[in-house]
Image (cartoon, rainbow, N blue to C red; front, side, top):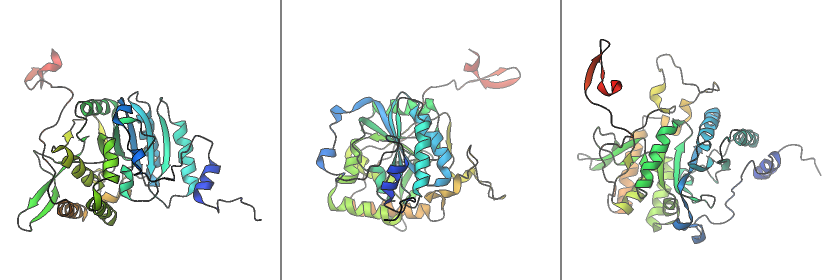
Length: 342
């Protein structure tokens, strides 16, 4: 028999052998995630903490991903952090190294677990997981840094509105009267879609998205796979259809979206780099902006056709964690808000 000195056998077996016991979790979906037994009883779930699900795909973002995961794990509000790796072409050695570093960066009580997704499907972000023991989950990206105060406040608002989607990044749907098609856009005074850059939702919605809704919901999930996009829009459809209410936008103090194309200096051809010197911006699927809005508008149109109704509802304004003085006073030769000198 030839020596097994290299990882020339099944990837999952190699990963298991490469890593210390307990550092890396391989959730290989041996059973059907939509088995009724996986639909957790809300009464058995913690209401005072949240599970964080970070979507990982690009190897160039790994240093930033590690920082984001460590920040969440240090919060007493976080029960656990799951890094959902969705890139099937990532070498096992790279994942082994990432898993080791994540284990070292877990500073708080919350463990950080690296989970290799069963496929590259964006629908897998919403798979129900038996390890989730909280009523709330945070779905977020590997290129969005949120300060502690804003995260705590967003979770506080969700606890007051547990049936709604709560987030920091919003968009809107609208109807193009000429083409009689739905479009994906931004309105200055209203919104109807919260993005998975940072989305807090009830953990039961994972089961509803992945396992319920019948044949039409299955067709809508297939559209997500075909488009390689729109999983966030579909979750907004699911929740709005259940609640007949729009999402809630929360004001944030310091949020850094490294994946936003507006970070780039296109004239000089420079891309942003994270603390480790790795290029962060151009790797994301949605960085291909030419067709991005058009494709997402197509998703809204197709979801509407299959569902037979438009469930998305508009909301207005955002909730902020404090209300400051609007009046200006002259201090030191400058006009400043009066409440700075109470």
